Image 1 (cartoon, rainbow over the protein chains, first blue to last red):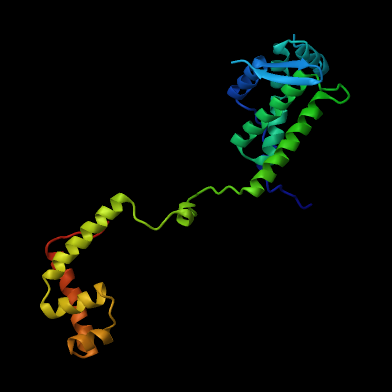
Image 2 (cartoon, rainbow over the protein chains, first blue to last red; image 1 turned 90 degrees about the vertical axis):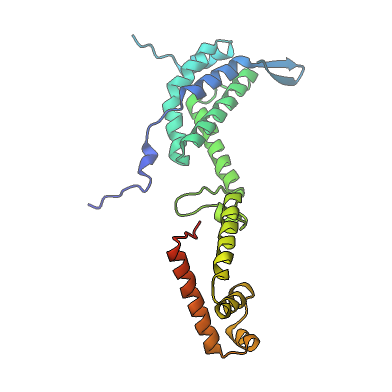
Length: 47
Length: 193
């Protein structure tokens, strides 16, 4: 039976983002505050 | 013992202010989401960028309280990532990115044809050395060579200006070049950049 090989064999590669990216997201989350006033929502980032 | 906490529970904890829940969610789905993005864009750096943008949207939505529990968390995140991948390809289509490689250098297209400072200095030096070498040639040969090379005259024009036949002018040019090579060899002069 004919075998069909994908042209993009690396497409199935399992990979993860680096710890720097994860840490950035965690820091971003910690710094983000959403303040609501009436129907408005304000985003503030604390450094 | 490894306890699997449901995504919905983690999302609820995160919305309630537990930042640790987000870390668990990211680490839990890191491989799946990253592999999905990478399978589409096939570039590590772009994958990291899209992953980051995806979770920034997730964080913003969760913190704003706009997330509805109707769907499952992972398919929702995957959908955000999918939309950002589409955005990425749309953006690249509008602004194609050229990357140089061994076969093609973008600066061969967009660069100007001026020599850089170093090459200009070398060229000036070669021109100056060559001028001195030409001075060493016999008068008749030097005259033809200057007319041909520096004044860009045809051999017909040279013959008319010097009063010799075209064949003689050609012969003088030939001997001028032979003699120049001899002088260069004799003095071990290198005239390359």
